Length: 304
Image (cartoon, rainbow, N blue to C red):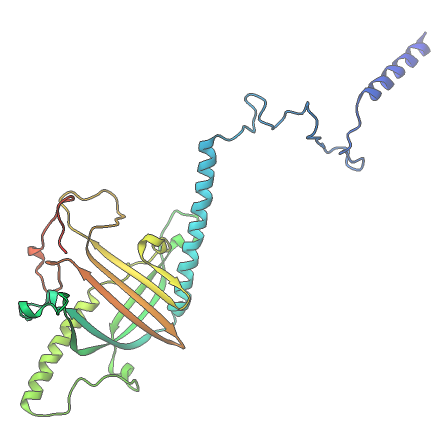
């Protein structure tokens, strides 16, 4: 009886083995691994068909959020590329100083010394008046570290620019303009003194105006900021918001502006040529007094 019972059990086991279909994805060399046949119509795990399943089908909001996160990462990588390229190509990794001349032009709009009838040309546009002297300057820039809670490396870095007057030793050997004159009479000496006063005023004014954010970040290279580098050319920009009695909330702003200063540069063979544009509304010129500058409201007509 005992022997018969054993045979009966063995037969039952054989029946179970016959009922279990062979998995074509299974590997006999790795029996501990699970191989899933996704063509099996009875397989519903992680297919989004089981309620309260761990791997649920993402909603439309989740999908859009993931897409936006991917786009933001791509934007940040582009910001980083622009930031590093500007520091490497334009500023030569902070190891290069540029020494050269600045020639200043001013529009008649902000010059009280120009008669009203002479402030515009035949086309009704403001006249450009060239300054009588040039400014000899030295320009450079370097990276500095700042505190940040971000894991993105360049969020902890900024670029600071330096513009200063060149020393006599630094201007030696350069083909710079001669604005001193050759005459030694009293009239020429008086003109030279007047020229020197004007030159000092221009220097103070130029150095007091920033054409790039004080601490340039990688985020400043987003398209709407006006900072960009393409090939051997670049642009940088800095702005001052128009004083409003009902200002918009937030640190970022896209206008209206009281002042907008832009620098466009191109370089080749170790030399750099730059053009700086200084835009201001009337009443906010460099010679206007701060206490007389007007405050505006959103919705009213703004000055030209």
